[in-house]
Each structure stands twice: as C-alpha cells, then as structure tokens.
Image 1: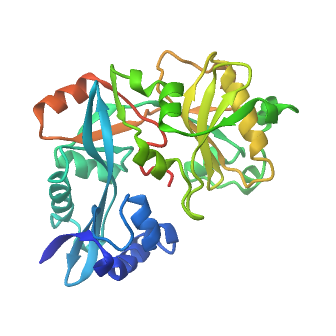
Image 2 (image 1 turned 90 degrees about the vertical axis):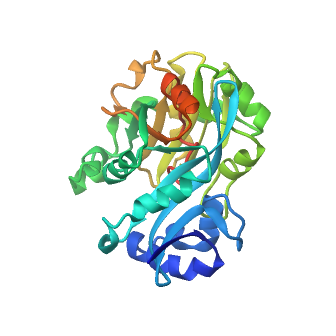
Length: 333
C-alpha cells in the first residue's frame, strides 16, 4: 500500500536512498540540510512542502511544493510552487503522481509550476493543470560548443573555444559601470515596480521570501545581488551558479543598456569556469538587436502551468500575463 507523507526526520534516510537512486550522488538533491532550506522548512521538523510516496518504509516518489505568495491584481494569494516530481520507474503507472498531486492540492488554493519536463507536463495536464504563456528566454553561450552540447552534440574543440563575439562586450572600464545596492523588500519593489504589476500576476516578494531567495545558504547557494548603473536608472539582479550567471530581473532605462550589463557580468566572472548567461524578457515590446551576434533566443517561451479548483482564480490567471523571473521558483537552485 502506498502512503503519501510529509518529509520529516523519520524519512530522511529513506529519502536519501531514493534521491541517490533517482538523481545520483549530487548532494543538493539528497542532503537533508539543503532539502529543508530549498523547500522552506525548518530543519528537523516535519515539512509539508515535500511530499513523499512511501511503500513498506521505502520512498518511491516525491513532489515538492515550495510555499510562496502570488499577487493576482491587487490580491495576495497563499500559493505553492510545484517542482521535482519523481517516481521510481517500476512504480510508474500506479497512480502515485496523482496521489502526490491530490495531497499537495489540498494544502493551498493555487499551485504553480514552470518549464516542466515533457513527462512532468503530461502528468500535470492529466491532473487538471492549465498552461499559460510566460516570458521569452535568452541564453548567451560562453563557448562555441555549448549550444550544440545542449542538443546532445559534443564537439570537444568547440567546447574549449571561447565565443568570439563576446569580445564585442569586453570593456576596460566595465567594472565601473554598476554599483551594488542593498537588497530590501522596499528596494526591490521600488526598483522593479512589483507593486505596479496590477495588470499581471507575479510571485509576491515579502521579507520571508527575500530572506530565502536573496540571501545565500552555506556553500549550496550564493544569493542574489542587486546592481544599479551609475549614470542611468538601469538596474539588474542576479547570481552565479554552476558556471552560469542568472539575471533574475531587469529594468532598462534604454534597451541598449543590456550590453553594459553583459560587459559588467563578464568582468565580474573573470577567471571563473564559464557556461553562459541566462535571462528572461517579460516585456514583449522590448527587443535586443544589440545582442544578435551573441545571444540565442529560444524558439519556445517559458511555460507557466497552474492548478486551482477556484473558478474566480482560474479566470484571473487566464486573463493576466504571469510576470515570471529566474528567482521565483526552485529553478537553478
């Protein structure tokens, strides 16, 4: 018989074995201190934000639902972010995913996810999730072989060859382009105008969310920093992780200032092992012709997927654009 339970000290060892089997030796996927932090729990306390499917004391499936708040117009809704759905191969097709979803959905009126894998998306759509469009996705590869490697084509020479177009963004004085600002809820709202997104829905940044996502955690996660261009009202926030710089949000006084941001990031990352730079574009009218030689715009935009049984909330979600950034979910942590 399959039981759906919450992650807790009782199941830490069993989950460690499950995560080792499903994800390999990556400590971030199986170490309890990281798991309590990622799913916004308290270490050593039962945590309803990570659901486990258990059979005879063995973990055979999981679903994460990270607590968050969503701004829907002028209303703040208590919600959760779905992630990390995984079921052992020999237990698939037995209704375990449906059981995990049902248990999780009973907790919050709204559950959201982003960019699910093809198999996860099929599972979520079967369980009454809906899709809405998200922002455009951009990637700037550091090596010529990176785009090919992302498609499963490995060319060693190109993997070691630096993208020559990056030289267009190398400036001797790049380190002086931006100054770091203190990160506070008020600062983030003032800079990026989250309070003015009445026509969109978005993750609501309060003090608790800021402390979780903007502050670093041990050596697992560096935290997010905020920068302002010294000569203009242009801002960006972001962080380095695993050789990639993730720009979590942008406010450009002029579209061409994106080149200054790229120059500054490359200067900050000197001497690091590079993969590339990722960012999203929530402003559909904003285009980046200045990045054409170096940036890859994905053909498919971000997918936002959500579940609610509340008719009014569903109508609101369908009518509004979801302003999604690379700091809203568990993506890249």
